[in-house]
Image (cartoon, rainbow, N blue to C red; front, side):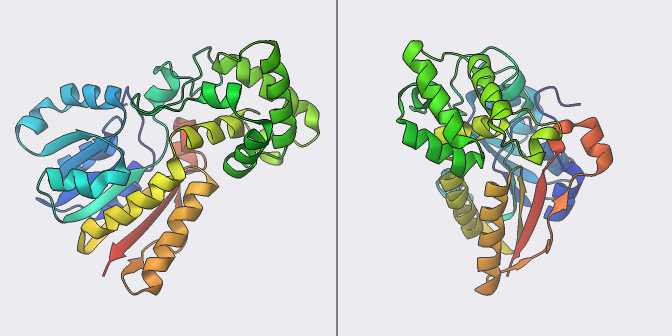
Amino acid sequence: MNSFHTPVLLREAVKGLQVRKDGNYIDATIGGGGHTRSILDLGGRVLGIDQDEDAISHLKKKFELEINQGRLVLERGNFAEMKEIAGKHKIDGVDGILFDLGVSSYQIDRSGRGFSFRRDEVLDMRMSQKGDLTASEIINTWPESDLVAIFAKYGEEPAASEVARKIVFRRKQKKIGTSLELAKIVSDVVRNSGKIPIRHTQGKHPATRIFQALRIVVNDEIENLRKGLSEGFKLLKKGGRIAVISFHSLEDRVVKLYFLELERKGLGKVITKKPIEASFDEIKKNRRARGAKLRIIESK
């Protein structure tokens, strides 16, 4: 078990990349290194990218041998800058790229940045501490209309208006400072709104969608995903593959449409006509595998 992060769809993703000995791969969201470990074990070489400084520090110790052997290179950065990062390391073509878009177990459980609605942490939600925008700034200063817009668009929350209204009311009394404080406000509103969708009754916390929306906006996740996919495809050799693991419909839609566009242009072949999902056994062992979808495309 990886103490930093338990990788989702590990076997399916690595198999989908068709890893070969001495092939060059990019783990665009290396996190705890679970997927990278499997690629290295199969003889591949990896450029591992992550925007979280804590992840990179953790991996430098964990993979000290592989780094010294030149089999693994680590770089702190955003995968939206993948081509530039690869160029820095004189990599102009790769055999495969993996994107695991989920928030790491470390970020949720131990980072102290407010990703979890089950513990009292400062409302930060930055994947990289070099970013300027925080969840606290959004919650405590953005206009009510903007809050409604992001909760509806990026959280797909039916009670977006009610939640935004309550947040604005509460912040006038005092600053909303922690994740637990925000989670309670959201939960009370969602439960009393009469708009709780079925998904909220199937084990999901009522604040899940609001926290998702905040994280996406703070880290500009959707736009960075579009850039990352485009940058990554430019680096693929003929026959190379991109595998993407997403965790909510907004991400999955971006990946699906981009892959279909490449296929229509004759530039790629979609390998997964339907996304691969986590098995019941995997979900039972790791609840964060719920909703995970794997899509794969091969460059022509």
